[in-house]
Length: 400
Ligand code: SF4
Ligand code: SF4
Image: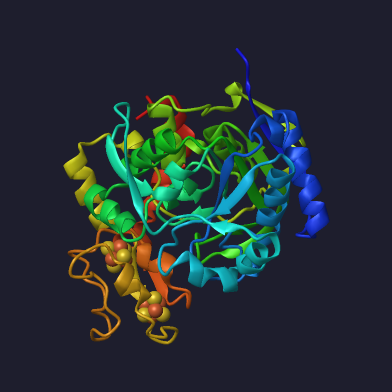
């Protein structure tokens, strides 16, 4: 069987020339840009633009990476267009703070249509046989996805496969959070979206990644690598190995495994360039959430919902840090919003209606939302125990 290639290239910083040669080197084992882009094709570059934050926060794909890929696509004869649907606010408003505006200006890049949607269908999909995605997906001949490697409070990690969730436009993302509620179903949806969008190539910005409470509230951590692959789940598995995260605890990788989408174990992957061991970060700060509880305690969906409601961390507003921007309230998928900074102290979050999606935490650029474990977890350290069991005996249990 031919193994799926994931390329690892070391590069310490965002020096534009060095970034370009690192990316060119990363796609060499995959056949170079000409293996993905033909002359005259419209190529959608899909970075991760979660919010309008500056590049040094490591929450968004660095503009130097976008610029380098745009140059390589141009050299291959492709026509670049660029876009994403941020969690809150518009792509246009995020362009200046993220540094992407300058890239767009310098290369005369056309912005992709993320204002309108196009209906897609796929009979093989698990969650969404019919789904509306950004019209840009329909306009593109080729999609190149440019994820940022980050921890993620709900999904453990965000990288190549999850990056396509940004093809769902605006508040529709929140509606899916509300409808699906649990992260396994959401992960299945993300695989569905990939099956429709069919990104041909992923080039991951893991030069400065994010550790801790990502995808927006964590801390930048220099890993100093670019990863590239035509097999997105394979890239995610390698990213997990680099940051010391068990792929079995990443819902999106588990969903790929369930749906037999791409390579989901190292045995099926060929690593090109640097060896994983040589770039591994042994003390990368992970999310301290409950991982894959169903493997240790198999239970029906309704029970899982109750357990999750009781057990999962709860968002709490830190009044000292809150700047009353209301992004948390505007982005909450529950109606009426489960969070409101104007409510009395201690009652800002309605724990009964909150579905623990952590969108509020994701959208709060003031880092004013803390995630608090319930008292019994703080006392008995149950999450720690379950994650320990999952790590040591989970691998012997059947896959769920
Ligand atoms: S908690 Fe954060 S997102 Fe919500 S209003 Fe305050 S600063 Fe804004
Ligand atoms: S309060 Fe926060 S975690 Fe709860 S449902 Fe709203 S956005 Fe999700």
